[in-house]
Amino acid sequence: MPLRQHPDDRRPHDRRRSWTPDRRALTAVPLALIVVITVVDVLAPPDIHLGPLLIVAPALTASLAGARATTVVALLSLAALTLIGILRDGLTTGNHETQLGALLAVSALIVALRVLRDRHERELAQVRSVSEAAQRVLLRPLPERTGPLHLASFYLAAEAEAQVGGDLYAAARTATGTRLLVGDVRGKGLSSLGDAALLLGAFRAAAHLYKDLPDLVGHLDGSIAWDLAQLAEQQRAQREDGLGDRPRPRGFRRTGATDTGATDTGAPSGTRAADDGRPDSPADDSGESFITAVVLDVPDDGAVVRLVDCGHPPPLLLHGDRVTALEPRRTSPPLGLGELVAAPYVVEEFAFLPGDRLLIYTDGVIEARDSERRFYPLTERVAERTAARPAEPPAALLLHLRRDLLAHAGGRLDDDAAMVVVERLR
Image 1 (cartoon, one colour):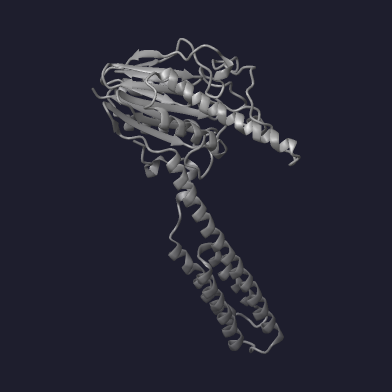
Image 2 (cartoon, rainbow, N blue to C red):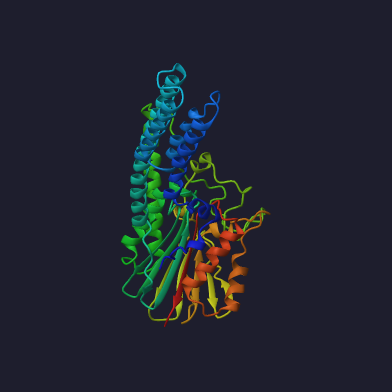
């Protein structure tokens, strides 16, 4: 079940953007300005002329309302300036004719710009609507109940206005249980959607076809590797055809490809080495591509969970008030790099009793930093929460962690982040 966003649960900068005053009340401000300027100008001494200030009214309206309201206010400003001329020096004086001409020209320009802005906003709204629909199709909400399991999830995209990015999760029923996938495409944001879509499609199509978990993971790795090979071949052919400079093909780099443990940089275990906190640059993304993932099989009969960890942070098992990281004996290489090793995928099996919960997450969670560049201590925060509320429902637990994560990171994440909680009911 995806978490519904509470109004007070938005990121701080989102809450600031979401506050909009009553536009109808603000539209009265330009009208009041017209009345005040007109009255003061008529009553002012002959050598004081405030009529040119009437241009403020249509300019202010353009920032508050659409082209139609801006046009109405502009016409009212012209009428007010005409009234000023009638009550003071007359309409035929050179000074008044100049003021009228200037007000007419500037008002026409303001209305034209507002028309262009309205058109752009309509196009942007249409594009955003299509984008949101595509993203919802890509990352389908997890079912709240599947077999004996209760699921909850949340997703935080690093890019503004995006609902999904390079992190992914999916669940599929099989004849004997439920299989889940949580993954993280190298990179972040919308640029990694292609690989995420490929993996999700391959998992949904094959999750029920393979009896053994290593065979399913091998199929997923082959799908990713084949796609990368085809992309590299296309780019090579384009270069040979002389179609100009192209990005470097995404290949497989052997150096450090399977090093998914902690490094001397202080990054949390099971994540890629931490940099100085800056997002990945486009140049980095062109060198290689892979997907860290954990694939789980939870049978309906039997209080166990089986998983294959492909370079992904280990899930956390919540048993009562105890939190245990399900560290694999041997981590497999990320999907897309499986051809670098000859050893088969290793299936790990752990006890998963009724009432237990699994917390599966991406490295965007544990690599989130606060103002002092400290990583988010997920295990410690989960342990504190479960000690206080050992039987908390999955959705409530995730809502707390989401708020805590955003508070730790100051309301803005440098990488996509996703969490999934799986609770065994029986």
